[in-house]
Image 1 (tube, rainbow, N blue to C red):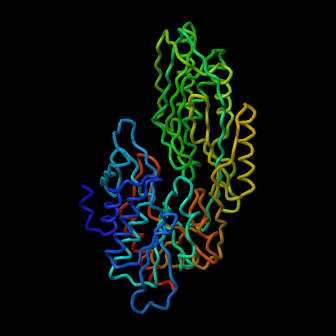
Image 2: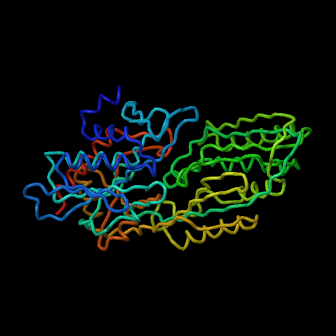
Image 3: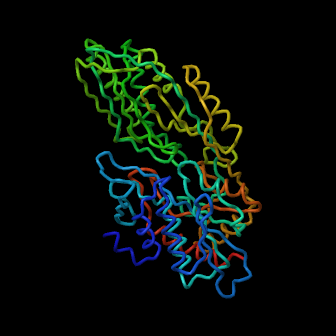
Length: 483
């Protein structure tokens, strides 16, 4: 089956159009123009605030004029990742959507269901002539994936609604009423480089890991490629093999668990064979320890003898590896207040060696602000022990769960009446824009829902077609019931 075969469904027709527009975070202008043009064509009021968020309004249907306004909300940008051998250019190439049974996938890239499906659902609902509802607003933000920038910059004076249905969740039948807050921690180490002559250069490349969303999949204990690389390099320390780093690169974005990492380093020619053996043995230990969750973990090692290169000095090379080794990654604590949910975690997200400095970035999340600050502090201390300069960067507030929310209670009741199944009211460890928008707009009551979406922020991302259709029907029903 081809993607064109589902285009008679309005939701997927819009999703395919959206997928043809490049929209990596920071490159949302094409989406803005598309949405404003669509709104004008349909006769809806379309607004762009000063920051670049898009607000679209549709009047109530006949007989529903006295009902309260409801906002449907999602973000325009997507996380762009591709397979290593792909030539896809995210600045100009459309996402190639394919149908695989009940799922939509992308050819060699992330799909962008997060959060293109929210926009497509909203557009389909706005143009559904059989839909009955009070006044509607669509709030489409930018830069969600890189720092919730659009939500922070949203012009609240343009928003009429005081209840909001965020469509950025990924599990059908789950109604989110809270989310983690977060803060980024960055460390930088100035390094001394020197020319090293006639040594063996070893290249180590880790691939095949699942990666995933650092909020949605952090509890699955997937291997972090940067952590794995530092462990393998530290095996050289344990075996008294000196090395000098030439390059180091791992991770892509703060909210993506690193799935690959590569580094180059020099060792003495007479120690090269031993170094390769030690690295191979440590790689095999990691593979065996994680064979269930990470069956495709691979390490590729290659060497070249008699190389002259500009490399980081021995002392700084060891500082980098030891700092990465002791730096925390993964779940720190689970929540007792909301069972089955991670309370506090961090993602060792990005590591880069440049000419004069090595930098590393962490994304810390928590449902509890004080716990988030404490874990951030632990990371800072770990880095500073090895001479790193540290700084706290992007931060966003937690959305504190409120089980008494009238909107949440209403949605849960409507779900049960619509499907015969009880909805799960819970909190999510990932960051959602609800927390920021609620903090900006006094009296805003929010929930977050969405269709089944899997492996977001990876090339394996896939969206359930049938779940999307059911979610469309539920939101349509919900809008007709809200007073």
